[in-house]
Length: 409
Image 1 (tube, rainbow, N blue to C red):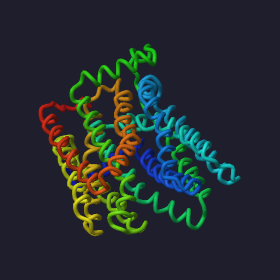
Image 2 (cartoon, one colour):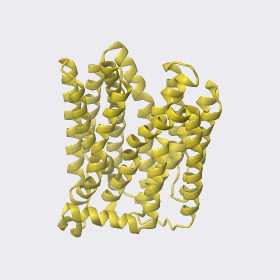
Image 3 (tube, helix red, strand yellow):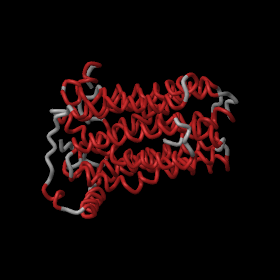
Image 4 (cartoon, rainbow, N blue to C red):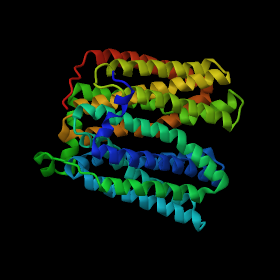
């Protein structure tokens, strides 16, 4: 373990110094837009069911396109793809800004723009994850780059919703979407300035999209380390990513409190996640990541079980800190270990499978969690999910201990 200064060592590389502020600003913009869209849909419909349906339809591209995106990333130049994707993000943000500005926004065009956004995200997420190896000159610092990216995400998760709330209250929805548009522009400029050496394998360049997809899936299935990491990501995301949907219900029905308390609870999770990100960024090798990953599952489970059993505001805030701490302590090491063991010519395809496990399970699990909460109540739902996660965490912890995670970087 290195000191605090080593937590930012990836910034010594020119490419990462350019990429880091761009991704930090753009992530804040994305969170502002996400909060604004949720508020807009509910303001137009007053229907939680409509909100859930829109989220479900918007997530369809993640299931359909993400596996093919991995093949595209492995076949074509990452730098050009990065620029193209940021331009598409910019177009999407501008379109929704204009629709709201001219009062033309309706549910159907929100759905279409949401689908368009997630088509872009289906490429962007595995593209960014697989590009980190090109941003650091020393592959040993890849884990630090991934952890700093997680730090960006968690800072954005703290700042974005707060900024969105202020903008909605004092400037209006349109300004939120325009601010997101402005946040994307620096990313386009900074990505164009990158100097990336992206060497492609001749075999994947000669394969068709379907052939490349089959090769990537076969590789993941036949590599025990990668298959186990993908399964862990899927299980953890399915259970863990239910809390943003469950917490408003918990705040209202269990704590009998209002939106300000919900803000404190979600903020506590963000602080926990940020603390874990900085801790992981200070690590100088992948040694010990399996233990941290297992500990993360245990800490997360403790947070969920505590939410279900203890119903005071202070304890709930502490429990949510554990939820955020445990989540990042599981997801970030999983990403780092996956990138450490994957062959470079299959990196895009494996990270696209990782993205499906992380993002694709969320929309389904939200519906499942809502159904279970309706049957047994919100408190018992947290206890049930916490216990199930603990059991899976122990099982995966044992499995990880039997595998060799020697880095191929």
